[in-house]
Length: 366
Image 1: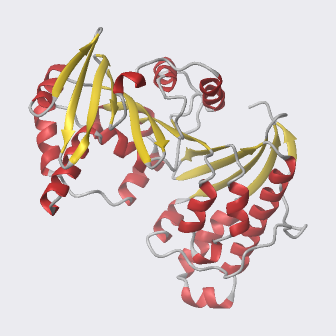
Image 2 (image 1 turned 180 degrees about the horizontal axis):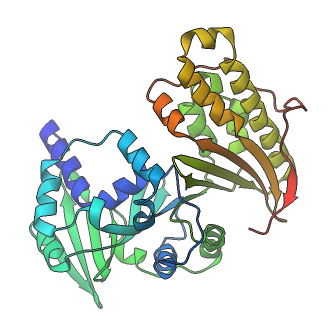
């Protein structure tokens, strides 16, 4: 495939997978807040997620857009260059995700070496214009009461398929047998997902990951040199579920990350190791070499994050969880524009010094 074909393929995916791309870019944070607006829509979108998914992300854009931290984050993050084909898509369909996308749920399904994305989104759609745009290069297949549209991908045998579930709700996938995605999920796996979704009830943005023994390895390959830890990777690989949450509070974001496992020993070791990482990071930032190399304001921003960090162990009976809480501040975002400092070359020992341990076992009803 030529470079031109590759570029066209990428642009076409922008048009029809725009909801998926936005969801992936926002998968690191979600707004934890009580409230019932859109609750029925939220439940419907999550109920449509495949039970064999490896991860599910939910975003309520209508609730996130007005928050102060969201405005700060979008201003801070680099914006992608304008795409001519997407601009044409907006003109043809009248749909612009920045304005018209209300909420969406995204499932990531991995089978062997293949990864498929399936999303269900609510928004303000012009159904007639969108279907007409799809039929310029795609096809329509009627299955019962559903019209399924398939759009080819340049240089790729797979197709992007979508259907309107209602005039304001669309389902879309970039592979797999599309009709199978439209079947309501039941059974133990579906119930496991719903249990985790209930814990996050009312959250306008969240991510739930069902462990497939890759989280630890992924961390090891992406962590800065001073934070790479085979021991931490091994412990993360023993987790059954991982959730990541964020609560905007004025111009900061409280991050809540939780890992769930069946063994008390694993939870204890993970909590001790995370406390050790916090100690090591704090010591590294106070080291003479770091003081010389790192801008003082950036150093203070990193120390501010570490100061508010806390590790907690939670006992839910059959499963044990470790929760890490810390704040992402406006100062941290500014500091993060530069490279993250190499705070230490060593890996912390699993047994953190007793003076810093804050991990504790407590009952939880969530």
